[in-house]
Amino acid sequence: MFSYFNISKSKTIEKTEVTLSTNQHLPVDDTLIPTGSIEPYPNIEPLTPFVLGQHQPDIDHCFIMDPYDEEPDTIPTDTRGRPIRIHASFYHPDSKTHLEVLSTEPAFQFYTGKYIDVPAIKDPNGVILVPSREARAGFCVEPSRYVNAVNKPEWKSMVTVKRGEKFGSRVIYRAWKGK
Image 1: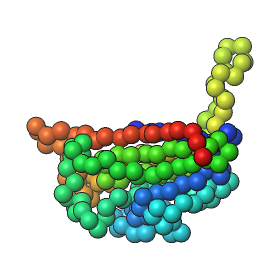
Image 2: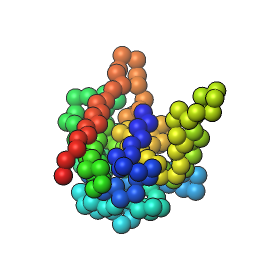
Image 3: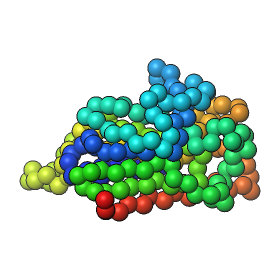
């Protein structure tokens, strides 16, 4: 599921305050494929807000909710029976908009939109129906399993559905206005 958000009153996500429930992530190689290790993301502390600037931080990583409390091979293919937890929360001081992303999933991808490049959509007369979107026009939060799990034997069971099993999860996007 691709869910892009911009809770500001501007064309960019600049000044959005972000709080992640974890800083444990899957480091990636030069082609953005996870290497298989789980490590703290540099300069981010769990449950400690940070602010998105014009260009930094530039994040496109999979964050792991419970890297030390749960073995990856014990994560079921159907997580709907697990507790729903806040993965990330956001606030913008200009719009006074809050957003929380909650899920039963063991991980989430967080992307700050560096490569967004969407042209405007115009009607046959040239009238703009949907404006263009450029870099950092939105951020994306995708509750998920570990990225590349299907290619890691120790993670594969969380994404491999056997006959008779179910694959499922719960995701809630909750937003409101207020101080």
